[in-house]
Length: 301
Image (tube, rainbow, N blue to C red):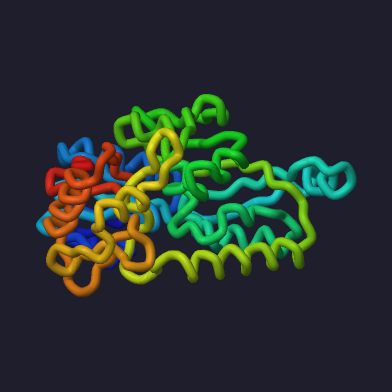
């Protein structure tokens, strides 16, 4: 049975440390938990808001009138038969992991098994959140969908399995964003074999690159998407001379202009105002990549 908690602080559950309280909050470990929380939200006539690692989301400062839930199941299973073929014939290995798995942990665990998911190194949050937003490296980089075979999720009181082609993946996008409260449960990935030492070296290289170029304290990653032509948002923000500008305790990072930093006790309102200032100042339309959840449980951006 799901343990439903009332008035749970949400700021500590996000990397940016911004947010008020969830009217109701629950952590989900089983498929039965997921079915129950969907019924619960319906009975309370409240929206269901799914939260991953909180690395791309901030919440309004007051009480969020919603049922906020997080899948915490993180078991991973490697198909040993496909791994044997991978080692012998160069085929990919099937790996099934649950939505609550921390992506960084998965990358390191697979490296120990001579499997290479290193292109996703440095991405914060859970596997479920990474699927929802098709996490990856830059507009022209490698995205999670490059590895996906299928996704199991719960929607409209039915369990569904979508093949990769059904998931509508694109740059920072998936068809899951268009659905009403889908709950991603697990994913099957196809992962190539690579010697552990080589993969670990690549992981270390990519982590060092991120440390040198991006801030990592009280931030939610990239705030804006790149333009359709691939122009990174930080270039437009730089051209508008907004690097380092702030509203309240929220600042455009000096280290990377597409990152917003909570330098103290920044609020949701600070974030809204700063984002709107950036969007109204730059020379091209910028789409917000972060998820801003209002007090009514609906996405503002």
